[in-house]
Length: 500
Image (spheres, rainbow, N blue to C red):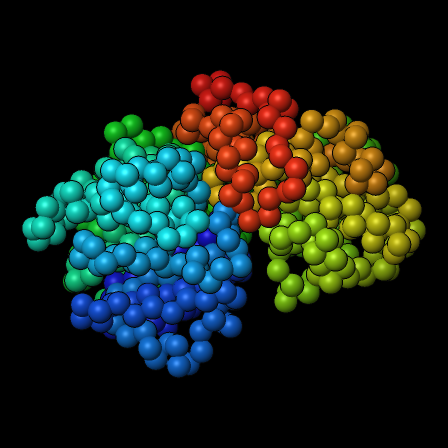
């Protein structure tokens, strides 16, 4: 999960890109970078840290030009501590390319070997994004053969990328002297949208990055589609995949995206309201509503679901936790020790909302269980009589390979455990999970045109159809927070993609 943006304008774009990255900060807190083009020269600044810390006035002044792109990075593979893996990435031929990527390639290792032995290209980092950049560069070189670049050449190159690359990818790339190309994988797993302002055309991971910078959201980039924006702001678009289907990542709606974004025709906020409605039905079947005194969300993604649930059950909704906004998301922090310590730094209780009450805590999802266990104990310490826990998402039982940092089964509290076993680990008096099918229906009802949803971390069905237990083990070896012990492949029984 990263946030990307690309802008072509008739005015300098450095401030616009910076502002858009601030609006996408929730998608990546490890590193940030901006690249612009002025004349034929690229200007780039990138470093580890939040957007506000990476870019100072002197850095912004050193980013001239009316076209550029940027990224906020959240690493799932490679060396998280290396600044050289911050994006954008650059390669000098053909034309000169800089690129930012959101997603995760499942065949990066094979592509890296192919690039070295067949395409004669060198990869200098462990990042799959650099692999993807070099595949794109090679395909552009092949389609142009040293001739002047045309939009048709760009689309042919993206078509070649689709044929070689597997996994999830939303990409924005700047081609020196020509413009910006943006494209999504043929399954549309990771989001990408298109918008415009006065004399400006932009692409970004979420609509909020466009609307929050004074632009108008036009549409989503389709799965398998490429959009080429030339330096005059003219938009060219073409489908570059043979058989595209639309399976956006369900975790975007559950947790990752901002609630004020609209993705693939679905309001993230409304999706979370719908999930709260279906969760209410699950709560009723587990805990009688008259045994619940108050519904309390665990900030912040769970608030819409918790509010809808409370309203339907006729139970008071209260804010019981105050969030420290200057502590990053706990589930993306490396190391269980750091993750556990950060919970109480991140949240503090309002004791009066817990004392002597039976409370229903609502979270957007339960991944490792570390945070949930700590929060349940915080509620008990504040004087709660009974603590029930409800998750607006189903149990996370399977690794994610498409760009979310939870790929190792041994880290997932729900993997190979019953709900009762999970409840005992977390320490709550009752545990209620969302139903997988109900979650899918609640979201798909908002856009029936979608082929489906990639819910692989919940149901083990990987929409690309090419993920095996051996692939997961290999991908785990590259992740930024890999456990010491090796994955037990015997416990990874993956359903067939065709059964989705």
